Image (tube, rainbow, N blue to C red; front, side, top):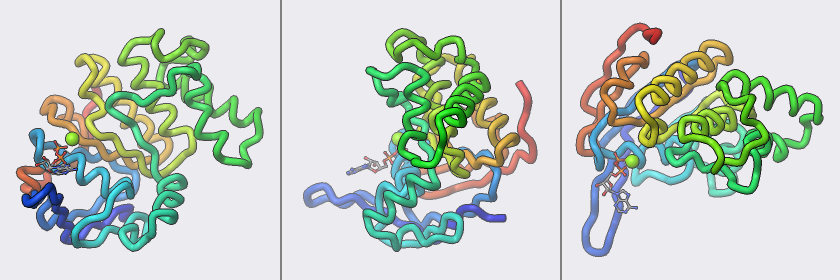
Length: 234
Ligand code: ADP
Ligand code: MG
């Protein structure tokens, strides 16, 4: 089953007199419960594309369906609501709230959802903190833990509302090699356990060896799709 269908997406940025074509006629399909990477050098359009999939921006032309919703057709308010219900984000710089503990950071998105009773909330937060291996850090504040641990917390936070789609723009860029592998393996595990689809961008060639589908972006164009047919264990 397809979760995402992108057709002929173009995106230009106007800065003064100059128009930059950041995405050129991009089309692809992504299945439910997959682990997909967009790879390409700096400036190739990765962030622009993820912002469009994340309903954070609109294209110059083209169509994008996520779970059968024409997301480019949504107005700002509806796009925000769709995003809140359907998409989780993992940020490169983690984006944890410094005045909240690890536990509270992960709990925070659930507090926005009215119908989660406190016992359920506690169970979900602790299950995820445990799954990402930072349960013992739950009472610490973000500046008291390492970069790898922060990224684990941000993955738990992205998953806590159980959205079927999680986006991550260069989630491993600020991590050492071991932590970067941990992040990819964690995505793989969560995909298998929960049926979550993960889409992330990277320019780290070693990391993409671990995913199922690799799309390559070059100068705004999608130049290849490689299906590795498996996710390697490391
Ligand atoms: P990547 O994430 O792969 O580094 P980006 O999507 O950030 O690539 O950028 C793609 C192209 O679009 C680059 O040429 C970049 O300079 C340009 N670009 C990105 N954002 C803007 C913007 N807000 N205004 C003007 N140009 C932009
Ligand atoms: Mg980028």
